[in-house]
Length: 196
Length: 196
Image 1 (cartoon, rainbow over the protein chains, first blue to last red):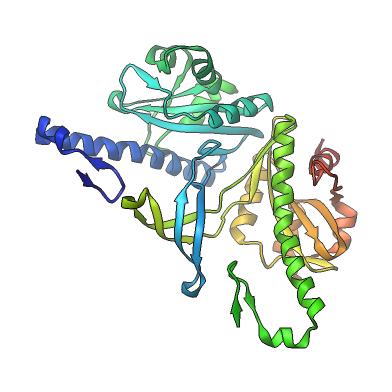
Image 2 (image 1 turned 90 degrees about the vertical axis):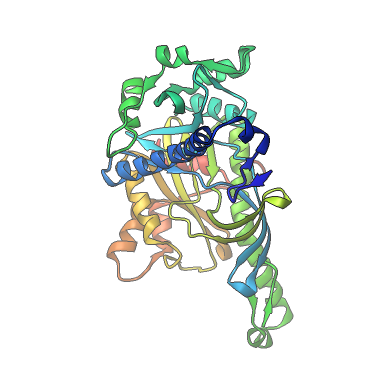
């Protein structure tokens, strides 16, 4: 077992079954997952600079245990905490916007096992207070990005036995997000179609 | 020079000039500054539970340099980063809310030296996109808390030579925030008076 600097565990058993190209694919697709978040962040910068909307990423909450003040406030002991809200929020046309971004390698559905009860409760509250709440989901292997109103995710999370949302639901009720050079993800266009 | 665990520096020279009671006052007032943020956080919990609004504190941004994955993702080297936005944002009656909380020991004015250019730019954008932007300021030694629309802070920051906002401005254009047992700071009442 090899541990990469980013904490991912590389299983030898799996690699034996695969040929070199499939290992490369796996690494490049991991990067694509990372770059999805980066695509959103860069798009947010574009939207901010063009005065279109103001959406910011919430910093990852970190529980700081120990700080060494003799070295200019160097944190020497801390842990990542679970995000109890969502990754992004902000304002567009006076409305409150709140969303979670997820990447999936699944081709037929979006699994809900990475969504916490806290996040579902948070999104229900956003809707109750008149905010706009949605998920932006990248189906990495299909090269498709959708926004889907949070009410669908809440419904599947709370009422359906299968803990995943079928791809057909995204085709029927979601809005596809187009890519461009700048912004990389034209998700405000999708918000316009869905909410305005 | 003594360093406290919270990083504050205790100067012996100063303590020599003061008697014991004034040192105690200084420590207790530092706590009151800390507890102001806590009062807001606890009030936000109350407002959330009562379905009145949904306001969350942005986590402090931390630049993670090194993580030890052999010890369950223990962060061993990191630094605090400057917050480029504000401390709090959320949704109330469908509107986007964004504010910064500050405590001051000053009795006659609120000094702007702790406000960064980034924060001013952020608040200007919030206003431009139709959001509600304000400061909540505690004048600790006067035992008074006000909300003041961010436009005043932006004006004083950009156009006035004196880098502080006189207390009289809070009396004239701000709204005083009442304290209660629960919520500790009834700042939503002040928002209602100022914006709704």
